[in-house]
Length: 200
Image (tube, rainbow, N blue to C red; front, side):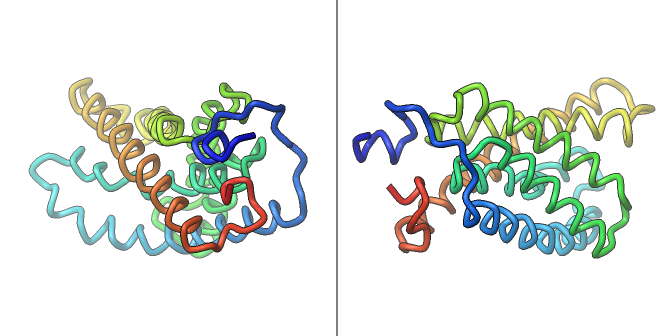
């Protein structure tokens, strides 16, 4: 595999899909760290809510934070199941720490993680460049919408629901997709990803 192929996600040989101990540990650390971030972000969400009082769907411009572990973990370890693993464990940690949504966040994490996982699976876990990261973040946002609309906004009109869905997807693309890709790139440049394919 050439340096460019490794860096930008175009694999010329079958990917190594076997999970190593370090893959499990790093994915778990990412998940737990983001579980704490999720718990803190709940406070940010509640404090910021009045700022969007005129048009509530606008608060979802910051919802992409809840989708980040699915993208980041997979960009780093590049193993099947990383997106779902990281997102689900992060959701469980945030639920255990306490939040206003209770254990429903676990279902939300499952759906969001599955959305991102499907994107990486579609590439056969061969492509981890920026375009794939953006799509993974966006589809995780689709998963978020598929959960949130029937659970929280079933009684709202279609324009309201459509606004929420669009902003969740857009936030997923920008914050989880682009933000996650930039964070992994920064970690790689800092030399903290040694021993992972993302360090290539």
